Image (cartoon, rainbow, N blue to C red; front, side):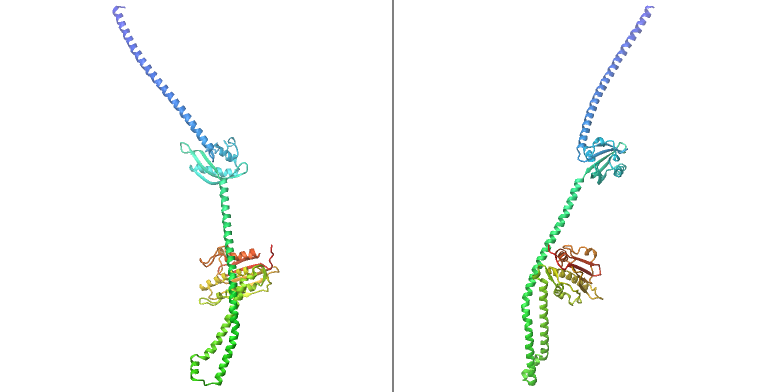
Length: 481
């Protein structure tokens, strides 16, 4: 090889060496870059691992917190798989409600825990919530525990949706409201009992007040009757003598006119001015009217005494008819013809009754209440002109049913009583009258007098436009305890 070729070869080698150095430098640079990238990736991966570990720890803490929250919730929580409705999660309250441990609940469905008819119902509600994809609230639902005990639950069912918006789980929250419902029912019962007690107290108070009023009224009536009786007897007794004296004076005047037919002019003038013949005729009528009035006052006094019966406040055998008649006598002014209506006719059909052992004054109060109501009803019909073809009347019938019991019927042909009103007739404070015209105690007190104090019965038979009939049954003799 020549020197020139050798030089040429050396030049070529030098070029190759330079290229190798250049390539080596580039390779070093590339390795260095890759190494830096690898170190950066390793750092990033390590940071990511740390972040993931932190997130996992945080998630685990959150899960533990949520688990603690769910377990400590006072309501029963169940989570079911949407596919087969098997329970995948439950809390301690759910275990307590079911009466079994979580191991016996997880993986089970309602058919494993409840009777078939209940499981069918619960499953139907589960599907309703899943199909609607919304919250389903059930205010009350009854379940039977494994022990056989029944509980009342308030239930909420909410589907848990996946990323596609389809139900994946079903959250069921059951709140046991059994004690609350029992307490509520107990409070309602107590409220009903308190209301009933209040009504009884009000009724008792009203009856005591009414009884005291009647007692005071009886004393007042008896006192008035006594005070009226003396002057009336004096007037009535002297009317006989007055009548005799006036007759004698009139006879004397008649003799004077026969024996002295032509009296002095002054006497003739006076006779003409005073209308002597009319005066004589009217004077006799006046005396007759005064006598009738005095007799009526005496009858009223007797009726007032009979009605009040202060001397018969205790049990005593009395004539029932006397009590009825005395009441009618007191009410006579309401039965007579008045400017705005015809008289009310009273028809009596009295049986031969024995003396009846009773509280006479209180029994008379019953007659007064029933007869007054009958008159009120008839007066209302008269005002409304409903008696254009018939006579308003009250029929009073008495009958001895047997040796132990008598019957008193008081019947009117008034407007009658609607069924809804008739059912409440004997309730305290119930009245159909205007304010100030009725206290609603008359028939209530009457019912108490007949049933409680006399061991009898009081009922009303009536319908609209058919009048009303009150039927009283009382024993002939009372058996004191």
